[in-house]
Image (cartoon, rainbow, N blue to C red; front, top):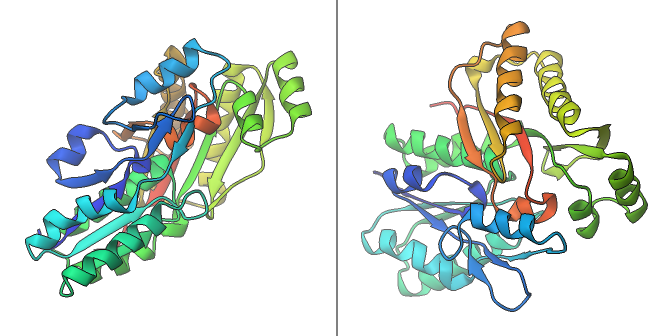
Length: 298
């Protein structure tokens, strides 16, 4: 390895993968009472986090960004070996995680002035941040230097796009994403939100009646996007994600595979992740979605 890789837990990559590829994950914190904060993926599993929300309908957990010390602890093992570090953070539009990483870098540089630490704003979230980190791993494993990999990665940050839905509007309303009136109307009429993340922003929500219909609509919107943008899937990575694992997720994936094949986009295997707490606090326990990111050039 010519450089080490660090990311915050918003990348939502499976533990087995991050351990296998020696990625240091810096956890976000989650709290159900506003007082006790648990490290995502370490003190509390993601399934347990969602189950707590599902079991307590009036529960609106909060997340807190990693501390400067958390990043120092992640950087130091690489720095002490004399290895450069690439740190990939959740978009700064959603969190101050990257500022903690930058502050940690400054502190380390005081004691290790020769250290090389590159802190990068992924400009991405959840599943497509995960794809971005995977591309960093692929470039590292091909033998690229830190600078070469960072340059290639910067060119693909604006290609990430997510389409997703969730079961309940109240979490979006609680987080200020939609108005109270829309949330109330949605609960009465069984309305589900259809959302997109692209260009570093959460796009405006469209609405759809019924859970099954909303899942199919997300797929339809995604495939229409592929056609409109004339995307060559050989040049892109595909990912799907779910919060609390539910039977509808298989229905969603089956329909996605069928629809893509029908439109000339045969999908082989793709990354499947469990959407983490940084997004889950805004969506509730039942987000399901699909995303893409362009592959970096070697």
